[in-house]
Amino acid sequence: MIRPVFSLWATLFRVVSAAKVISLIGNDWTLSNHNGSISVPAHLPSQAHLDLYANGVIDDPYHNLNEFGLRWVAYSNWTYTSAPITGLSRDASSTWLRFDGLDTFATISFCGEYVASTNNQFRQWYYDVTDIMSSCEEPDRIIALDFGSAPLIANQISNEAGQETWPSGVQQLFIRKEQSDFGWDWGPAFAPAGPWQPAYVVQLGHGDVHVRNSDLDIYRRGQLNGLPPDQSQPWVVNASLDYFGALPEGATMRYVLKDTNNKTVCSGPLGNVNTTKSTVTGMATIEDDKVELWWPSQLGLQTLYWITVELHTPTKSMLTSVRKRVGFRTIVLNQTPLSEDQLAMGIAPGNNWHFEVNGHEFYAKGSNIIPPDAFWTRVTRYRIDQLFDSVIDGNQNMLRVWASGAYSPDFMFDLADEKGILLWSEFEFGDALYPVNQDFLDNVREEAEYQVRRCNHHPSLALWAGGNELESLELLLLNESAPEEFPKFKAQYEKLFIDTLAPAVFRNTRSISYTPSSTSNGYTNLNVSSPHPITQRFYDVKPGHYYSDTDFYNYDPVPNPWA
Ligand SMILES: *[C@@H]1O[C@H](CO)[C@@H](O)[C@H](O)[C@H]1NC(C)=O
Ligand SMILES: *[C@@H]1O[C@H](CO)[C@@H](O)[C@H](O)[C@H]1NC(C)=O
Ligand SMILES: *[C@@H]1O[C@H](CO)[C@@H](O)[C@H](O)[C@H]1NC(C)=O
Ligand SMILES: *[C@@H]1O[C@H](CO)[C@@H](O)[C@H](O)[C@H]1NC(C)=O
Ligand SMILES: *[C@@H]1O[C@H](CO)[C@@H](O)[C@H](O)[C@H]1NC(C)=O
Ligand SMILES: *[C@@H]1O[C@H](CO)[C@@H](O)[C@H](O)[C@H]1NC(C)=O
Ligand SMILES: *[C@@H]1O[C@H](CO)[C@@H](O)[C@H](O)[C@H]1NC(C)=O
Image 1 (cartoon, rainbow, N blue to C red):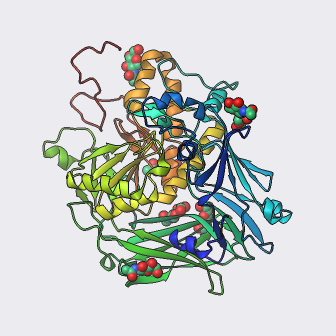
Image 2 (image 1 turned 180 degrees about the vertical axis):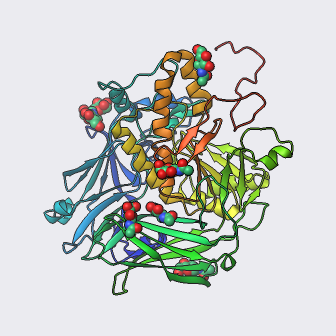
Image 3 (image 1 turned 120 degrees about the vertical axis):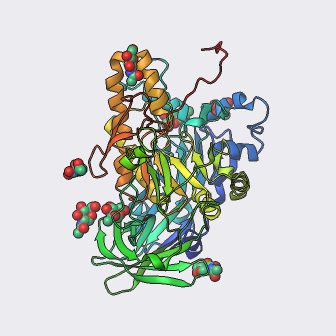
């Protein structure tokens, strides 16, 4: 049975609410194929391969050449069915389903009725199912998640009339699912399917709200993305809660800042409270001398604090609150043109390209991290803890979280916050071009807003990059195979990585820099309030000038026989 856990889960997820939150995490699920010839007990969160393996239906996917032998799993549809959900109330004003991640093409039904279909592994999905609930008896309160085959659906989408086609040799991706699921030079292709993140049923009483995501932005007053801030300014805390339910008019907000021993550092009302149908936002200023800075490993202490953001009715009764662990630091990827002073020091002309933490330039020493497992749902905190200890033991202070995998889970950020490892984080795009039709762009924008808001409070978050090897590789390959079409494809690149992703970052954080491609020649203009906020330099370079972090790939002096 799936049992109600009310405030227990709410506390674990640092969201306290009067709403009833029933966790769907656990073993009360069944996994079956389309005709029922396979039907086994299953878990949430999970992916089909892991439940099949746990029940002896398939061998260890990592063993031998099982990668090839198990292709049929990726080409099948899989259904996760819950046990009847108990503890739901008839008296609730509204009932919602909330999924923090479905991989990827799921058709959701509740009480045998269709709810919705999903098409993005990296988004949170939530649905008002009050109508369905009103005529659904307890034994029928079953959720079914029908997952279609991602490789087959991707092929279908690519063959739709009107889809873009790119020159041969250029990779193209039509779906929002971990790209390395389809194989990479370092890893196998399993293309797994399943409910890979937690899920909940939420019931709200009259006047209740449920916070599904939140954004805490901490920056120096006047700070703008990508530019070194004035370190003498006080801190601004901008707290924004994404909610569903009926927020009473005139709601107010408060914050309490505590150290990690729970000693209150400061508290007070949040000002400028701004409410929309789905978010409520407020701000406070915290004087510099109230808090200690957070530093990366070897540069200082990793001082952390807890912030509780409370939402109150106009009559001061608490509606809900969100508690997140934060640090006070500024981190900037400085790509500004060299100053006169720098040139006078004899530095080669061009643009800066370095990180500054709390106003100090430092050497970023690090490595690249790929998905630690082909199946994320079996990546434990313990495994990442061990990996990150070795990062620290190796005197590193930054990891580049490679695009074409998945966004770092919160427990990974938590460990990085504690150990002082900066995470250069990328949106999940790499070595490819993508459709730029409105549906695709809207889907990407929702994904980016959700992820930027979810992660923004972690002091270890160092940067958002649009993706992997786009300007220094993919666009150049494109130009080689179809130079006459280069302007068109460059415009597509700009539409996705500059006009869609950059504003999604700048609308939700002032504390984090954005660069469209992990490797590029930097920008010639940055204006975070413009709809086209970045003008990239692209290939407009002068000999003897240095601009950014462009890769060089051809180190091997031996001719490549396969090239
Ligand atoms: C069910 O489908 C599987 C896979 O497509 C197939 O191998 C099996 O024969 C089918 N079983 C029945 C009873 O139709
Ligand atoms: C698998 O699911 C897709 C939709 O996701 C559907 O079009 C297809 O008919 C299903 N295949 C089977 C064998 O049920
Ligand atoms: C601080 O308070 C939280 C929430 O009440 C509690 O879970 C935690 O154990 C406390 N920590 C310490 C160090 O007392
Ligand atoms: C509230 O936020 C919305 C959306 O960001 C904005 O358009 C509006 O001007 C804001 N209202 C106030 C009073 O600040
Ligand atoms: C594109 O290719 C043409 C030659 O086909 C070359 O002249 C041009 O410099 C290339 N552009 C870029 C951006 O590499
Ligand atoms: C506060 O954050 C919200 C997004 O969460 C944003 O719309 C607003 O502009 C921010 N305000 C300031 C002053 O940073
Ligand atoms: C930045 O863009 C905004 C909006 O397009 C515009 O109003 C402003 O003048 C621009 N700032 C500069 C310095 O160009």
